[in-house]
Each structure stands twice: as structure tokens, then as C-alpha cells.
Length: 208
Image (cartoon, rainbow, N blue to C red; front, top):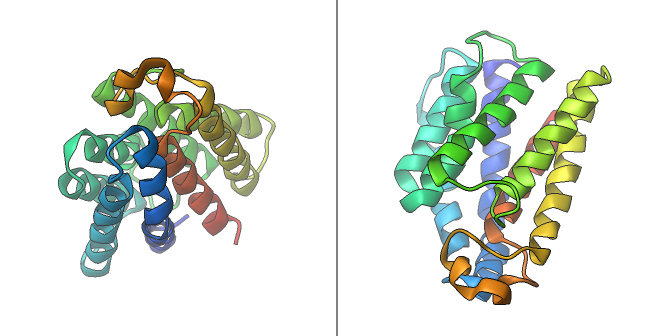
């Protein structure tokens, strides 16, 4: 994927995230303060505006800029965390003109490690990690089987969606929901759904 394609993909991801505002707010209202969708909308709207104005020399540069914009505009820890997927993931990538399947895996897996460092969460804590981590595993499994990038990211998106749904059976250990203890069970985590939508939007774009 060349720079222009990465920019188009980031725009597609941003549109998907913005369009999910109402759904994300509703999910967040069950165990949080109900503003997650507005926060996501604010950050990804800023990304779209930034992409229209900036000029990038490489895919890595565009991805890093998107991550930095999310961190700067979303506010709070969630901006650093979601921004970490793109900024932290891109930082680990080679700076080249055309990204391949291995590079997308690096983006996701290094982004996962960055998010763990920023937020201190791990698998099973009922966070967006529970969507991103299985997505990374699924992508790697498909990659090891020699599948093309489209199949790899499609498998990752399926795994992310399943992982997000599975958070309904978890007790929250991070964020506002952690204060609810067992009462946090029964509701999917809004952040995990956000991450699953991001990865599905990437898959939809790559496979279009």
C-alpha cells in the first residue's frame, strides 16, 4: 500500500469511527459516562481535517501523524491509547514507499504493545486490548499460512469483533467501569467495539 492508499484508508477508518458515535455513546452509557462516541468523533474528525491539509512523504509518516492527531485532540488517556495504535505501530515500521502484509502486522502488533505500555492493561481486563490482541494473533496466523494481506486483515477484523463481544463476560479492571466490579459484566466494552470498527474499516478498504 502506497502513501495515497494509506491516506485513503485512514479517511475510511475515520468516517467509520465518526459514524459510530451514537452506538459508542450508548455502549459507554451502561458502565461509563456515555461520552465515548463524542470523544472518538472529535479525534477522527481532526484526523480527516489534518489529512486534507498535510503532505506526507511515506505511509509511515501518515500513520504517525494520524496517531499524534488522535492523541492531541481526543483528550485524556483514550486519545493516547487509540493514537498509540497508529503512532506506536508506525514507529516500529520501516520507512518505505509501499507497505506489504508484514508491515500491516507490524503496525497492529507494535501498536498493541504501545497501548499496553500507555494504559497498563492486559488481555482479559475488558479493554480495547481484548479486541486488538486476538486481531494480531489472527493476522499472524493467516500471514504464516502465506495468505495475502486482504485475507490477513479480514481474519483480524473477524477476531477483533469476536474479542469485543467477549468483553461482555469480563469484569472491568480499567477505566470507570472497574468500580462496578461484577456489575460491569453483561455489557460489551465501548473501547473494544471502537477498536473492532477500526480494524474492520481497514479490512473493508484493503479488500474493496
